[in-house]
Image (cartoon, rainbow, N blue to C red):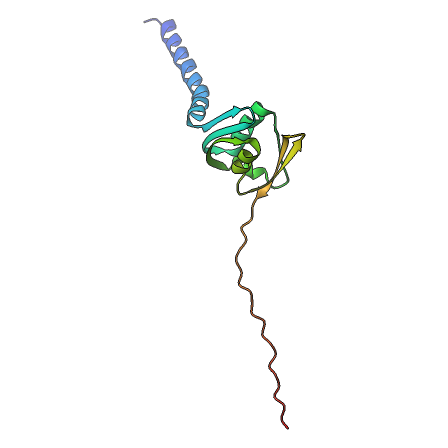
Length: 143
């Protein structure tokens, strides 16, 4: 073979290798993503399996136009992986199910949800035993 053919093989191999490096992570993420959302009128069906909250919110925003806003300190929630399944729930109930365990607020415009604000995770309340209050002893009266 000539030197030109060998160099063309190397260039072709390099181009294919770079293309695979660029396309492979996107394909894997798309296949590995356990996200299926179905919108019907005012209901939502979802099959979400270990998917980052950010991906779920982007999908809902693109389909329904609902705005999502995180408050200070709640940005780490977007990387949390969630798993939930339900069928044909009203949008309000569906969002409550998705945001279970998170402090959130649904903002309505008319009768539809306009914005969702995320404040952070719900802090678990620790059960504390009530301390028994000691009553003062009665002083016995001596006569």
